[in-house]
Image (cartoon, rainbow, N blue to C red):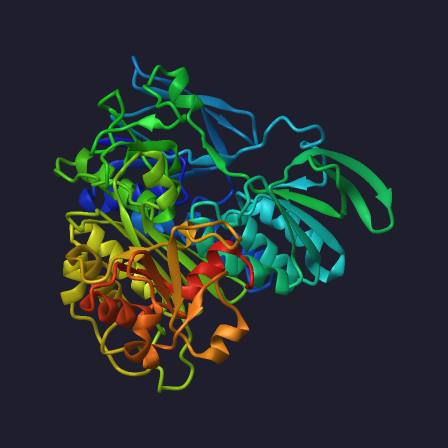
Length: 554
């Protein structure tokens, strides 16, 4: 068996190593366009920022190690220029010598990844407009920021890479402005979940230009600026350089030119074994179109974890194993100046777009027991089917413990679990690590209670921060001191401890929306009032979620 793999990094390198473990006699040829076959591209921003001090630390599997440990035929700085399906060969060009040759294969794996999207904006190809995809890009940016050579930078795009680059350039002492087309940072998240992070980013000195975009990049020659970034709003931003981080597109042209089926978003169509429309050819990683784990529909999600698994599955299938890719559910995490945001499954935006029925709840638990020093809050959002309780997705934002909770819920989604299962799941507990009722359990308790009808909920989006008339009443059950510090317009303040004696002050012919700060006292008030015949619901996540939703203090 002779396997040729186009592209290494994550998916291709994983496929190559797995192939060798499965067959010691197979001929495995790994052709990589870059100088290094496998590097930690997720670590590039942190090398630029100096958090990762040595460039060598980014080399996950150097070429010589792959040759010696796995006996792979690793060819770097060589590029496949064509796939010749009828002959089962690929045309290859050596990028250093210009030599061209043809390589045969029994099975071919395409792992060409995705390239940064660069729209046709005037000046985008200029020398001071950068991207961050590979080691060469990182070296270029490192040279610009090391030793205080640059003072200010503009980042176009506030997704994963944009925010990570912003953080690391601030660490280098640069003045940083981030421009984002939509009205939030980190677009995969729902907007109310990242409002606190936007405030946090601004507190670190980063200027955010949301709901705006770059219209042109113009070279400049002043003492502190090599570039002028002109925005759609008319604003002009001087910078030493700009970094374009507005998403990626699958590098599927090689496959398309060979007549292999391509999906509507440019990914190579694959089956569960990662085979393309040509059964002798596989595609893995960011270049491959896969299925959404939750819906089964085609999707394109560029993540390192799925890429590695897909490479392994392709190799398994080549050697006769019935390995299947179950789909991508989009579990991801990002660090934001010491804070963490993570998500798994579908967001509310995605569910709305797909017209799927859903309910949601918000909670604000501590990452560990409150009596143990150092506890900090997590904001957690859980999305689920409004009748069956099947978990659609979850998002969390906090300082510590965020990854653990989203990982647990990611496993729950993968296992087809419901919110009722989250109530019962047994998780490890000691006061420095969690609570006897873990945040995952608490999310299950709250969501299951909603489905059982114990405490109907209303949501912050339905409670506007204006004088808008409503035919229902808002009840604040916090203390007078908390109420005076900020409250929802026209709310009645009756502290929970006084509610039993003061129920006569509440209307019996109108719906009552109850809230406290994070939802717990609101839940207790909801139960009390329902026992006494009132039509009442609890504002999920309380005043804290309401503030995050409307991004203001009232």
